[in-house]
Image 1 (cartoon, helix red, strand yellow):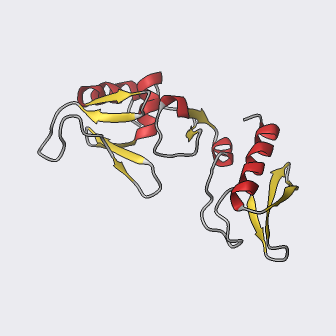
Image 2 (cartoon, rainbow, N blue to C red):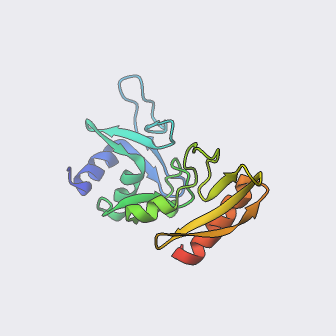
Length: 164
């Protein structure tokens, strides 16, 4: 893997970074397809932003971390608010994969019809329920009228149990 400080030094010649907005912008126009001041990178469907610098592609959130901290993250960069396009340094933290997975907001379509973590549709009761895993067991949190309410109850319980 390329040295973080070397890579950031190369990137600083081409890019500006705003820790407050999380945006990388090109310092100068290049080859007609990039204009000075344009936001750098391309956004994938899942929201992650990829930037190509010196023939190397890098995730914008990892580059932001290295830009500010001087080294690549030790673990996984977690977007605290769940928005994978929000690369403000205050929204990024270096955590183990398990913590990162616990912070997901959307799980994608599941067989129970829900997309929000901790929210499950119950066909029998025609309501949303919320549950959380603790030490290999499932703890029932409650019944709710909406998926969003069930998810919010899950997030509150998770924060109590996992302290963040």
